[in-house]
Image 1: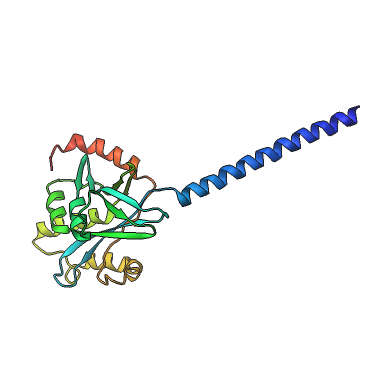
Image 2: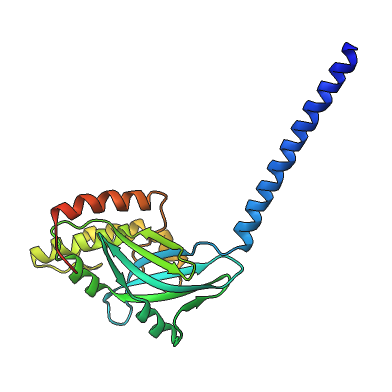
Length: 225
């Protein structure tokens, strides 16, 4: 009797363990399937480079769709404190799109070039330059953003150079040369832009850092864009 009860309990426990393993397997496979085949977040990269013809700094934003489905972008731009600087119209003009939304095809990317001097004029109005974000919003409402750290770094250095009455360029500013040298690997990756200076990639603390800093800075500066 005891032997039969022991066998019965072992059988029950074994079936429970096998069932648990099977459920976990199904959940993992389902998560992988959804990540691969469903519409996900866009991948954003941003950099500042020197135009080969004009030798002026420009901001380049690359938005990549790594899913198998096309994603329609309804908003793209910058976030500074509580301000959203939308540049979707510039993207439409550069992509020669007349539709309401800009479509990023599967496994493809789209680029938008924004004038650095305009962003510098806006940011230089603030005594303290805080975090700057690049964002996109698709038609499903998914908000993707990255912290554009290098833009903040360049603007701060340009402000210092402006106070000293000098121009911050590759040729006459050693500090700027150091930034360029530190980013040589990124320069090689973008063959179409040999004068590329900086690149930013998404970070895991974007949302919390953005909210914390925004609340602090709004108390110190009430400037309006």
